[in-house]
Every structure is written in structure tokens, then in C-alpha cells.
Length: 353
Image (cartoon, rainbow, N blue to C red; front, side, top):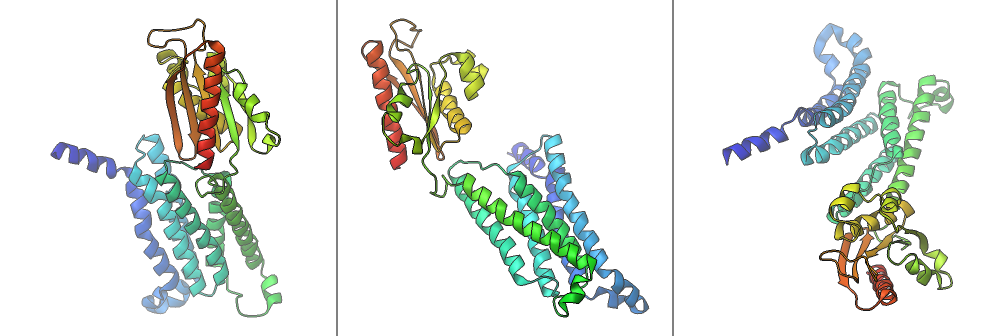
């Protein structure tokens, strides 16, 4: 037990995680440097230090922000990415940004609506991310989110060091170059905040029930019969994205991303191949639901443990990917017809769910 505990502790207290915790601990230091009347504690030097107060606070903010890059680099380069780090790293960023924005409002450097827009975005994204995690779905971060963070950080630094024009003559404010630049950067940050939220919600539309139910198919033994059955219905172009007829292993790998090692170890007619085909079709074609079929239609082609009629059907949705095994009776046409019928049933059930 002790050995396991020591290993767990060593994994938790990695250099990257220690930096992340340090970043959170330093947030109150930044807030104190920005809000507390600490220059007055130095007597005769109070005036000089007061002139540098905002720059000291901005410097601390920049230092804390830079550690965000450092802990990520260490975690990846040392192969020490942990669940604790995945949770705490974005949380540390949110704590820092929230503390800075609220402090700037308290100093009358920033209007409240700016803080509400930025924090509302973070709350919404965090809630959606929790929903996605509960369903085993990972929503990839976009470049919009990264640019949003960079511009927010730059804007906070600029607002920390600029003089306030929240109260006073607007023309005086416009004549202040730093004030103008600060607001330009902040407005870009707000635009990116809103754009990244829309992008994130679009990617998570399946998770939050706003998906368009677009469908796709990856077919092997049926050679396009599933797509043909769907497109026989008038208006199917509104929901059917398309299909990939991956009759050979080469196409299964190149077009759908089925790993070569899976094809070599488990074979084309296997659960793992069906799962990978379904995931590949859904990802490559941008569909909400994708079905895959791979099997042996006959009259030849049977393998040990895989008689003619053996079929694996995969289904990929935002909730996960599953596959089911069948051994259909009859000749080649009967096997293919039964496969199409069952695949369409799975699609219909998934859409209803």
C-alpha cells in the first residue's frame, strides 16, 4: 500500500502541477499588489512607489500568465500529463482572469458589462465541458479560444497600467493613446470571447441537444447499398452527408483512419475495425451519426471463426461508439440485404434517441 501511495504522490506532485498550484497561490499576491495601499507602508518613498504600483501589479500578472505556458510545456515534454493537471490548469487561468477583471472593476478601470461577458462565457463553456465529459466526449479546443486568452491577457495588462477615464471628458480619453489601444485590444478580446463561445457550442451541439442529426455511412460488404437506400427517399440530402465505400483495407486505413495494426491483428471483419470505421466516417464527413458495416457476404471468403454471413455493424454518435455482431443466413444478396436493413434500423434508433 505504501509503495502505491508513494507512486501516486509522485505522479500528483509533478513539476508542472506544482507550477499550476503556485500560479493559483500567486493570484492573491497580484490582487493585493493592485488593490492594497502598500506604497503608503514605506513612508517617504510612498509617492515614488505609488507611481510604480500599477506596473508592479502588471509585472506580477505577466509572470503568473507566463507560467501557464511553462507548466504545459513541462507536462508534455516530461510525459507527465495527469488528470489533476488537466483539471487545475484551465481552472488556474479562469481564477487569474476573474480576479483581475473584478479588481479592475473595483478600481473603476473597467465597466461591469465587460466582466459579465467574459465570465458568462467561461461558465457556459465549463458547464458544456462537464456535460461532454459525463458522456465520454472530448471537444477539442480551437485557435479562437487560444487567441481569446492571449488578447484577454494583453488587455488586462494594458488596463492595469493605464489611467482611468471611466469618469471624465470623453474627448480627453480619446486623446490618450494608451486608453485607445487598451480599448481596441479589449474589444478584440470580447469579440473573440463571443466567437469562441459560438464555435464551442457548435462543436458541442450533439452534447447539448442542438445537433442537426446529419448522417454518414462507411460501407464495406454492402458497397454503397446503405447510401442508396437512404438517398432513395426524397429530401434525404437535408440529413445525409455522404458515405465512404471502403471495400479494401487500404481504403479503410487511408480514408477512414482504421489503424493498420487493427487490420493486421483483428482483420477487416472485426469489432475494432467496425468501431474505427464508424468513428472515421463521423469525423471525416462531419456527421452527427455514422454507421459502418464490414463482413463476409460470400459465397467465399470465410475465415476460421468467421463463416459466410459474419457481419460487424458499428454506430458512432456523440454518446460513444458501439458495434454489434451478426451471422446472417442466406446467400450473398440475402446477407447484404439483412446488413442494410439492420444498419438502417440502428441509424433510426440512434436518431430517435
